Length: 234
Image (cartoon, rainbow, N blue to C red; front, side, top):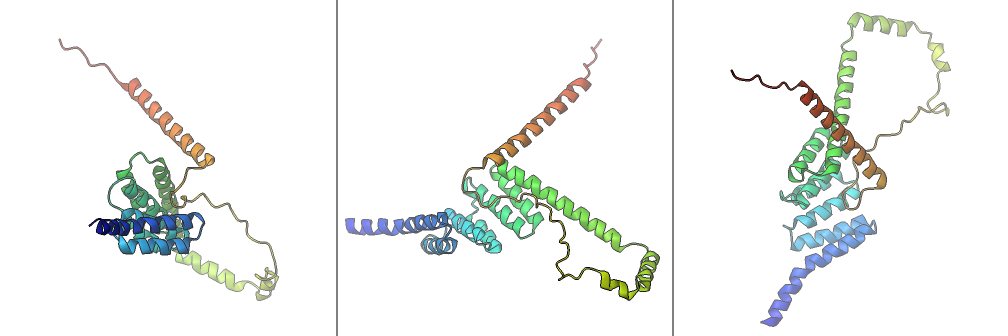
């Protein structure tokens, strides 16, 4: 009887051992090997949300974002901390795929589980700004396409009157001419959550919180200034 219990306990430890091995490989940035270890653990404990979460992180680090999204979806159990973290990383993965609206929904779902998560709030605001800029650009492009047909015809006629020989003076794309200026890309949502915030990230988040607090205080002062005492009943 005792031998059977030991055997059963041994079987129960196998997924944990393989998960630990996957974590070790993950820390060594051997993401493909880590993924294989997580898959072995899941073959024996397929309902474990932590294993799906770890698998999603390995996929994310391998730039396999659609598969990472599916892994995080399997990890979501509606409970903190795994559920909230899975939604957070799902939002990051969807952002990397260019699915901004879906990314926003993932962050919102994560905040319903962990409403005080500062990182998730920051990423939500960031992606919402990105979506707004994208939609504004699409509106401008649509307006440009709807310009007066007569103006477009005049522009086409002017282009046709240009001397074809003038085109020889233009820079050849392959002649080593000036390169366009490259703007520094804005900071994107961070990779899967697994460590502490950097000092710069912490300072940025604290500054954002201070601004929010100052804004709330200003609103309260304005409210108090406009309040009028009720008249007495006679």
